[in-house]
Figure (cartoon, rainbow, N blue to C red):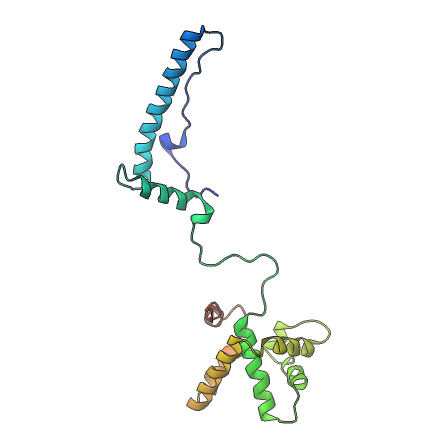
Length: 195
């Protein structure tokens, strides 16, 4: 992956006429030395242009090498986030954390409700119904809950909900959970934080 297109002399190869194969040995050796000297002189001129191209002080080869490596070698390049292959992710840590809290809230409001029943009820409401498909969306949510209930994100979301509960700001908690989709950048940006 080359991100820089070199222009001018840096974008052109060094062209030198090679000596003929039929020359006598002595003349061919002199001609090869002349070609080598011409190539070395051209490379020297282009090296100065390379320092200029990367805005590096002439002679500072370490900085030039690093600038070129960053520009030309993917392993030296910085990216904000690794691009994912395949189908877009519906479930991330934050969605799992919200799901855990919402199932536990439903059960706290109705002590006779099982996790399965709470998941089935949530599967009929937004945003959860947009995150599950298939014949049994309630079962999908229950499985997701079982997989996520002991995660760090579940604990963090429980703590966040407890904070909102203590402060009397439950509607602020519910606002993001109602929009757990890719159209809510604040929620999904927060999901990139690693616990």
